[in-house]
Amino acid sequence: MSDTLKELLRRNDVLVGFTIILFFATIAVFADYISPYGYRETMFSEKPFLEPSLEHFLGTDQWGDDLFAHLIYGTRTVLFVALTSAVISTFIGIIAGLLAGFYGGVIDEVISRTIDILLIIPIIPLQIILAYYLGPSIWNIILVIVLFGWITVARVVRSQVLSIKNYSYIEAARSLGASNARIMFKHILPGVSSLGLAYVVLNISNAIYTEAALSFIGLGDPIAPSWGKMLNYAYTYGAFTKGLWAWIIVPGLFIMLLSIATIMVGNAIIDIYTRRQRMV
Amino acid sequence: MVNTRFLVSRGIILLVTYFIAITLNFIIPRLMVGDPTTVIAADLRLPPEARENLIRLFGLDKDIFTQYREYLVNTLLLNFGYSFDKYPTTVAQLIVERLPWTVFLVGTSVAIAIVLGFILGVEAAWRRGSMLDNLLQWTAISAWSAPVFWIAMILILVLAYYLNIFPTTSAESARLYSSVFDMIVDRLWHSALPIMTLVISNFAIYALTMRNAMIEVLEEDYMRLGEAKGLPRNTLKYGYAARNAILPMVTLIALSIATIFGGALFVEIVFSYPGLGTLIYDALNARDYPVIQGTFYIITVAVILANFIADITYSFLDPRVKY
Image (cartoon, rainbow over all chains, first blue to last red):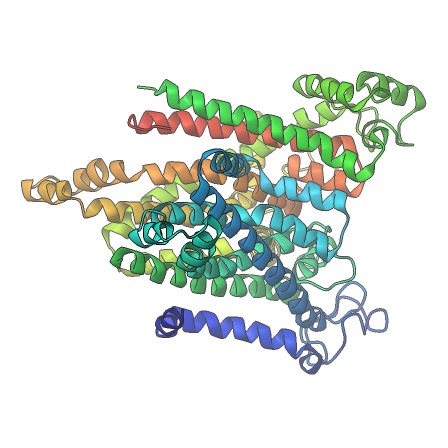
């Protein structure tokens, strides 16, 4: 693991990715010091649709709320939703992949067919419908992301387990009388753990996207600030016909930057992992 | 040469998918809202006789299994009852009206994205490590990361608001057309930005897949043999390399159909384009449950059909395919 980390830190793309992620993490942690106003602090007390100025870096929204404050505090929501759902869905994906790959047979059949089907079903409309009927809240958004976030992880882990399963050290462990659970968690899981890490990172980008999309059509948490919600307001209240470019460009740029950073780091981990696999 | 066994097994999976999707469509509203009549028939916007009519049609006064059976039959007949918001328009009428717009939008942009992705992918692989190649990788990651509705908003901001080249909303002008030609031009002009959005959002990932597959093929021995034989460059590039590298892209196309449909919904919303996306968006805002159900159903069917077409294409392209 520490070898992987060392190798990672030697790569330029990872350093860039880490820096960007650190940038957003800093914003989330120190939001109170960065933003001159609280979220919804200037609501109704400031004029609506103000252009960007020194007083309001990104201008104000339809209720006079400071958009820069929305952006900064939105980082917290976005990171919270993305991290939580990425960790949970990767965890589920690893377990499902382990079970399917290790046991094979009926368990594999059920898990693999479920994956096949979920890959065909139009997930975005299904997520919209679920989020709609569940009602708008952060936890429901996380649930909706997790329900479909485990699929890719499970698929990749399963195929990795299938190949690791045949290595001689697994056979050695078995002939020593190790139980299935022991083999799975002590001997196979460490083999796929860096892959798991990669997918936590990659799932973050997936989660950011889904959260933004749901918030954009008004299915986000009504209380929490978020980048998708800023875009929703920008669209609903016609920011582009008013030429309020900062309101549109900046939140999307934040979504894109954070997503690119996570993809760069995630892909780098997978890259190192596959190179190691080839050497074994 | 069509591989029947492959198609049959894919057909079975698609059929199972169909049943699971429509069962979810049946269960989710009932679980969340509770009373099934609320979802289908009980809304103050409907007159009482229509309500009773619907309750009988969908068997809502009977047990859940009868309801499910009636539901299966009714969905096949595209019977989703009335729109709460636009009574007496039926859900089926709304869908028939909107579906062609979405299919046009998705079809055109997928076609353009595929052609663009193919050409760029082949060129990037052929000139590995060149500017084009590097640019392509960055474009792919960026396009993947940028929300499709944000791309749409930026295009509106720049091309419609600042440069005033394209119209911002809708799919046609609010005027009478002087001729069929006039109508087609006007509609294409209105569709330009939505199509551009979907192409920008999707072509790079096709190109990247094509590039990666192509690079593997380029290292095959027969490529070197072809080169040594002195085959013309284009035969080598397209006839040998691209022809053998195209399968991953076909797989990706099949897998991405659902995503593109999803993306199209958001693009339609931003442009107020009169397709299924705006239909479902308006229905969500108006608590128009039957329309929500019907739209999800029709999107599912469209995606499943598109998948099947992709499978047939796949088995044409690669007779070796096994399942």
